[in-house]
Amino acid sequence: MRPGSSAQRGQTLVEFALVGTLFFFVVFFLIGGAWFLAADDAVATAAREGARYGVEFPAGAATGDQCTYAQVQPVVVAGLGPFSGGATVTVTDSYSPSGLEYCSVQVQYPFNPVDIFSAMGSITISQTSVQYLS
Image (tube, rainbow, N blue to C red; front, side, top):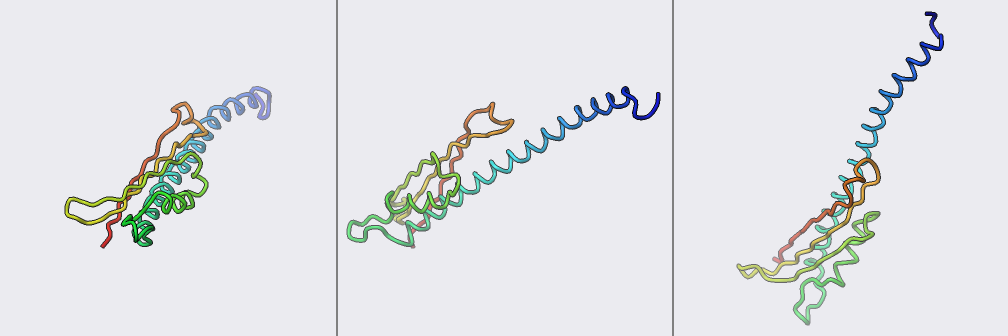
């Protein structure tokens, strides 16, 4: 068999089909995983920033509320960046059993994979951050 014959080209095509499929599978797997980690990090950072903002800048000194939803929600949404669509923010202003006032912010984001993970459906990323008023 001569090099470059049709049988040689067919063998090369089959090898590329096998190796190329695996290669692209791994590449898309890595991209999807990186996108999930970016979303998880954005949700954690947004919850932390929202709780910190609620403690550092009291909403209503006259009413006694340390942090409110109306005050914290815009900060959390801004911190989420491209992941803000569909996010749910829950803000709690309360006292711990030891009497310390705290601001708790919970952020939930429905992550929808767009590659090989899409068969799993939506994955809810949830992070909670608590900051105490000193």
